[in-house]
Length: 172
Image (cartoon, rainbow, N blue to C red; front, side, top):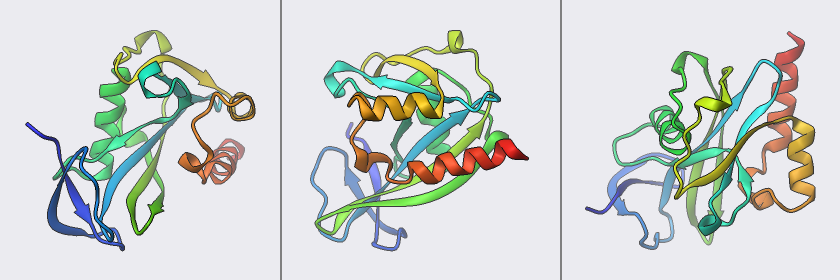
């Protein structure tokens, strides 16, 4: 059975139409995705390395919202699917909605931050999605970006804002 996703308009509102995953979007059609940043009490970020079939680069957890799901539900599902973790919605903070548009079509990525300490030994990787996981400091992520083992720059154009936000939390 094909995976169906809600089609959004250019303002991020549901249109009532559905999109079959894997088929091309039309101009003016957008989907909803999530980026999930889990930050521990040491100000480290839980990141995963994509499987070789998916590019073998480091990134944050994330995925697409299936029809009927909101972004928080999707963020929680993706964390459980990709790394086997049940994140606590009480620890969630909506950070921002980041549009990703090419040729008048694309995706709105809702960015979620979870403040949660997790034992990395509890992680269960979904092999099709990820092959490794680690807690990484801001400087480690910057190193991964510099050495080319991080996903492309346009995936997380907001990363400097994210680092600033997390730094502000730690000063409180």
